[in-house]
Image (cartoon, rainbow, N blue to C red; front, side, top):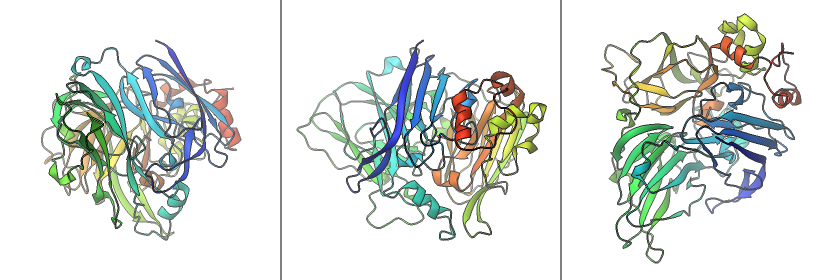
Length: 508
Ligand code: C2O
């Protein structure tokens, strides 16, 4: 195993990825799109971040990585660290002990859709599917806004937008462009590692004239399953095998089509699709694809993990989260779990864990607006999420992949064990899952990873309007792992931001 180091200078640059509008974007080392991080399972990763934005704070989250023993490297500001102030530096340093397809993005308020989002690939010498493909290609799908997030966010949660209508993106992108041609050799089988790095829109993805075989979701290898079209929510990853034709007679389109059901109003003239091409012969035409209605979306609920992990059939601890959207007295629209809209605390939750001794097991010390849940070690934890809202939401848990043991159709209402049906014996496991409009989901995981982990909707608008809960897992174990071990640059980020640090997170 090696140590892999990246030096990232985060700063503004300009880009015009849809050819319609040139705008500032957040780049790394003067480049945008930002680089793909690539390591091999078992490697230690060091990412030295310098914030050269000048006018915004930042942080990095490595989406889907468990951060075992390293919750202080997880990235969300005011949760596991203070945001990195302009001019500040911060080092992320952790061991990557899981293979698969991930991504990394800023985890300060609403920032990543301005560009700080990229793929994160962990190669696996023991890949169970390695004999099934010849080459691999990474495809990021995303939505794109012409206006910048600080402006859009100020409008979104305001009295001017009492219905909470989410801003609609102007474009869809693949690999942050609308002009992608992928060179294909006849007869070869390709593994496409696909990541939705968007802010909001789920995308329907299909390859014309080719079928897909799904082999990985969110870092979890699955038994191969055939699909003609997949539905990839914001933040999900899907690896699929695509076998090329045996001849180069024609080229084929592939498409990411944003799910327009998510948009309150579809603006006239919106091109909600992005098309790329599988290019067998550059001299031949690049065909126009079919419409999304020509395909049937694949249901991921039936996917079976290769490792055959069995259903956790005994639950020790249940967390119920009832989701709704509503207005507060200020006239703006917010999102709620159990009538609480998340407001982040003044001191990062992790540092409160580290400075409160035995009291760290008492949820009350984490404030009244963090939707906090304290878990004991090594329990089977169940999250029941009831969506009392007519929208679709992709839910993500930091620090774990969960078993998706139940997912209702639209309009099923609150979860009711009596009518829910049987759970799969070997449930799909992933870290980001869709709950249907006015439906419910039930997720299970084992609390074997001490840390402070967010659970939130991965629609960035809904993070801003408060659809976030905080899981404080085994706080006394966090203390024994990290007491006195928070690096100086992490503490400095708080001082730079004048965060009032109670107690002594550094243990000194
Ligand atoms: Cu992609 Cu809170 O994460």
